[in-house]
Length: 65
Image 1 (cartoon, rainbow, N blue to C red):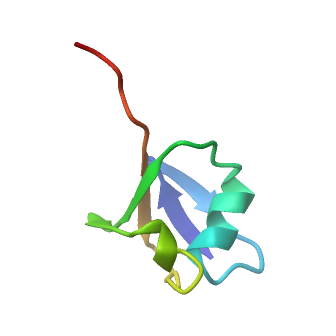
Image 2 (cartoon, rainbow, N blue to C red):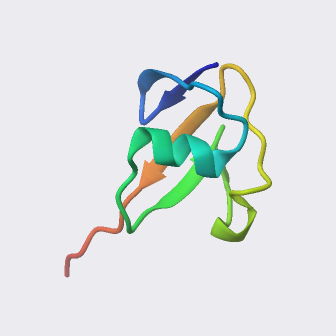
């Protein structure tokens, strides 16, 4: 399945949910995740199924002041 992660094309293998995709991408904590512009709570990552062409954004907190 082809998706986009942080603006780059990514090919998933044997993946159906968001948690599996994040593992294949080797996402590093801490981050928030949005699919097609919609925030997905961490509690729903295991049950959120992906579709061909989905766009995933990983957003890391930025410190500043």
